Amino acid sequence: MKSIEVVAAIIQNDNDEIFCARRKNDGELALKWEFPGGKIEEQETPKEALKREIKEELTADIEVQDYLMTVKHQYNTFHLTMHAYYAKITNGTLQLKEHTSWKWLPKNRLHELDWAAADIPLI
Image 1 (cartoon, rainbow, N blue to C red):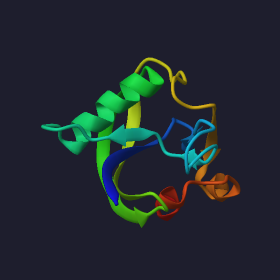
Image 2: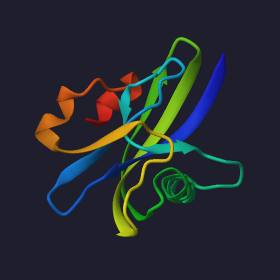
Image 3: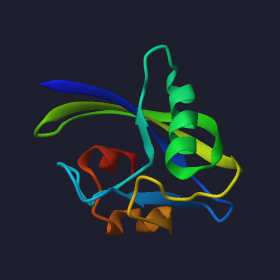
Image 4: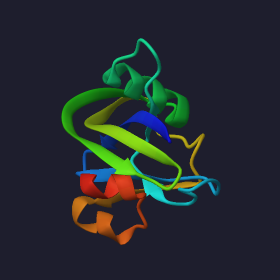
């Protein structure tokens, strides 16, 4: 079975709301909500990968802050290892390139969305 190592950003705004992104309508995780991020490339640190992925997917620059946790989850078709970090936007505004929609939610409302299973422990 395929194993994938990724990073995820818990992006918080000045109102203490968290950025949530909805996936495209394809694959095992179609239309599930997630914390944005992506695959770690060869020779890349998790923090470097997270900065690159957010720039590519959301067109903004971030400051990667504290490490939150690593989640390991077995999906039907792959095993995921996800390293999550808190992050702040330092330049630009978030614009969707890979997701279908987004929301800023306070922490106490995150549970209202239909999350990808690996993202649930981060909530």
